[in-house]
Amino acid sequence: MTAGWDLLITDGRLATFDPELSGPYGLVADGAVGISGEQIEWVGPSSELPPDAQRAASVRSAGGRLVTPGLVDCHTHLVFAGDRSGEFEARLGGATYAEIAAAGGGIKATVAATRAASEDELVALAASRLRRLLADGVTTVEVKSGYGLDLDTELRMLRVARELGRQLPVDVVTTFLGAHTVPAEFAGLGDRYVRIVSQVMLPAVVEAGLADAVDAFCETIAFSPTQVEAVFAAAIDHGLSVKLHADQLSDSGGAALAAAHHALSADHLEWTTDAGVEALAEAGTVAVLLPGAALSLGETRRPPVAALRANGVPMAVATDANPGTSPLLSPLLAASLGCVLFGLTPAEALAGVTREAARALGRLDRGVLRAGARADLALWTVAEPPALVQWMAAQPCAAVVQAGRLRDVNYGNAGA
Ligand code: DI6
Ligand code: FE
Image 1 (cartoon, protein in one colour):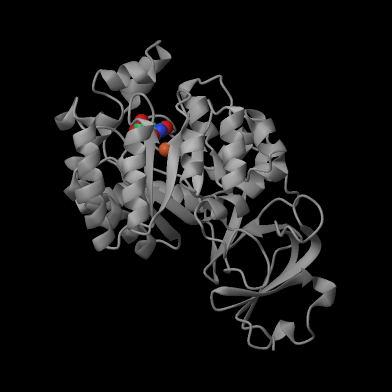
Image 2 (cartoon, rainbow, N blue to C red):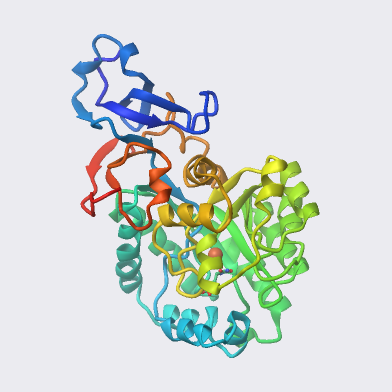
């Protein structure tokens, strides 16, 4: 039964990322997609379209250009107030991120500004950032808390994240990051703060239904593996999945720690060892690579991409959009940097912002073009998949279909 399709996309070069199709992109050179409601009903070569397909309520030609799954940005810190451009200037002058953090800047500076901001202010600030992601073809975004570090502000941040998903055409997945850093009022009392995160904040966040997962920052300047374990134990007790900022600035065994808790993802991984990579492979935990942070921090150490690839660890790529270490609002540019800085192939980088990013969020219903998947698609001004990551800041997104609804993207179609 095809006459009931709501939308038919014709004349597309489909990069399906369906592992059951051959080639790195799962390419269907002259393809079509049939959509009903929020679901893809049919994907295949135009020559095999059912005879009554053209009777779909609406038909859109992709003009022979590329169609991919909608992009998934699986690691962002979009909700915050304040401005840390002075820190950027100081780092360019030679100060390190750790020195700035130790002097009360860094995450703590954003915490102070975010605590002082109203819910409406935070929605307006985050919405304008999120619109930039949407212009890049994003249809699902993960948003973390972690700039509140007290119950009221953490709840406010998560409510703001949920509100973004109501105001804008995007599916928002929320993550509670109460264990981002030890707030100033708990200086020297990290264990006590971890108990509050685990025993007070987390139950309240769960009670309010505001978090889909729990994250923590495992690092010498943040939380020890033992402290992270306490937060993870509480999360798992409450039935939430976990993920971890792991091995970003030093090797703290973060990847293995994430794997031991069957984390959805371990993110950053610049200092991850072979043992950590093997643990990720064993657990099926996704490695989320964040080249924007490495670039902005001037980090020269690279995540172990060759070892991750050799061990079959799924690799996602995300913006890590945040005001300190990764002021980046383009997942396509993140994918491009994943290629030129980290050595991903274009196919890996693009699977990293679609299929594997969806996996990193535990959302296996999206990130590929195939019948039964959620109808989240991006239509591009370019025809060749690697052109999406070859060009930087070209804004080649022409339109998206989000939850079955087609919408033109008004930013540049000056694409490559
Ligand atoms: N790692 C990061 O790169 C960000 N958070 C984290 O745990 C930094 C956040 C910030 O500096 O505001
Ligand atoms: Fe982050």
